[in-house]
Length: 137
Image (cartoon, rainbow, N blue to C red; front, top):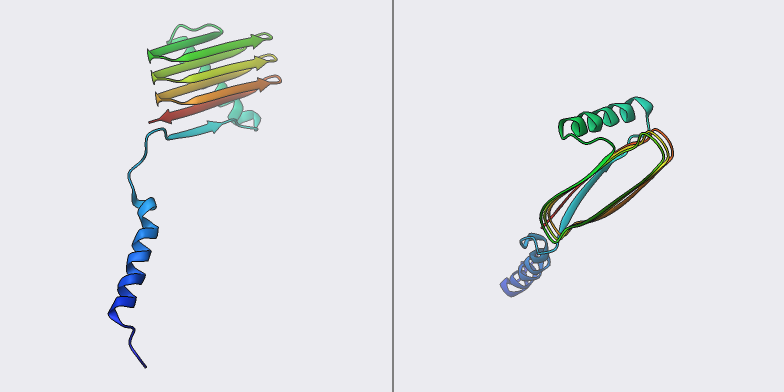
């Protein structure tokens, strides 16, 4: 059995480290992470809707609200129907978010933090609920 020569091992190691370099580099500007929860079951959907309605009572919101803290944020809320609750909250800089609700007794919360997130939600039907949380850097 022959041993590989040192230069071959060094070249293989260097190529391996070079391939791993992009994976180990720090996060670049303009990234984001987002999580959406839209339960399909009646029980889970009702629990989320109740939570959003309690949150809205705590914040003195009746049917819908856009709350922004920061700068250069853009938001919109459109509701068609009865008994809908829509919440759009943006904290940070450079967010864009819209929520459109068509139907009755829907509840949805769009929460954006950090900077530069872009979310556009359309909720149709009756008795639905959901929430989206986004964080950008």
